Length: 254
Length: 313
Image (cartoon, rainbow over all chains, first blue to last red; front, side, top):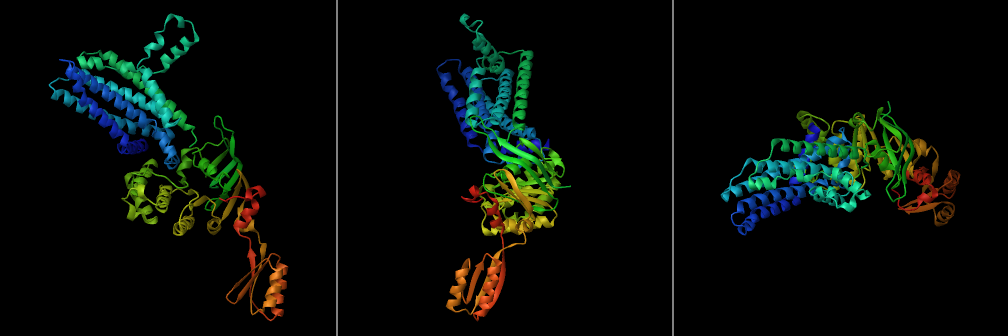
């Protein structure tokens, strides 16, 4: 456990020094504060808009951090050859991988908390109120980041950061629209394409499940069962992705 | 028990869309406990591939390798090996002290043990003055010292060093050479690759020569070079110009420095005749030196004719 924590601590330290993080945080702050401008053109809806855009910013910028830093986590260590002296230590390779993952999740936890803190303060400053559903929505966004980061890590141990980032980005896009894979026009019925799309539907994580933005903006509660189900779904998916990453990395020549 | 044993070790690299590359072929190697073994070969001969397999960075496609009887793929074997890669890279934002602490944690050492390791290694490798500086601005020599310290964390009995003197200035090389000798005195086993044959000759008990992924020779340097001489050098003085010209006509090479005339002969018999001639011509015989073959001569001879051209490394 100490070995995993040592790697996690270092990954955290390294990510804190990554300029990409600050560029993304700056853009996130701009979009949160800029959301008021959109509120002006929708009279009486400004708090709703600020909440909605704040959650969207937290989600999008968290995902960008997960993709940009996540897909280079292992690759960078191989490329810069820092991995040589680490993998040759008496530790399991999966311990290194898990340490990298936890380090980046630590960063994402801090990013999520900071962005939520800033947006919550902004909503209160504008005279709005925050219901528990708002924070539940943030929790599910973080849960989605767990999954995206695990997927980025898997690709980082298989391919280059650019290709990895492109693949994760497309999975992210399709993950928000998995319904289209099943909702096909009649001419698709019985075709090979239908089967392929059906497989894609089950293989690509349904990221729409993690989206409680509309409920949070309007203060509508969701059932505890639904939240528990989504949390379990996210954890199961993440565990499978981490397992695949560990298997891919175990046999990898570095 | 031997420190390193490899049996039929092989590595073929396969990449999609590229031809297969056989980097290592049926390597059988035995490194005894407490010996310093030099692993020689040109670039691409398979030295780094062998080292990476021993340090579990690469998986062999054939054969097995053991460190003190433990398969090198196991964690127990890795506990016994200290590894210094060629031009080691560490996290640039860490200081040497943080770096050693990090590797101590990876070894599973507690805080007190890590502090002791730092005290010992920072003194041995002269890291105290740079303890709080980030590695980012370090020279090659400084990085090599940190790398050596990392390899020694946890006091492993076997050190595997990949080109430890490569890219260092003469002082840096001397420091590493002294460290290797010091480690030998501390009864560690050292296995290192190098292309600097003079350095290998000075510190190694035995060497192995790798050509195109195959071990062509291994043995003690004096056994490999044998007792035979590569020629004789006759050093004389007080010769007139006609005597010098006569000797020059029979020798392989000639050099005149101050009062001394140095003639070298490939055939020892020709050397004897030259020595007699010096005396007959009224000259004075100052030295008669047998010329031993150097490791470099041997290395060049062991390379196949088509391998000899190009830069040796």
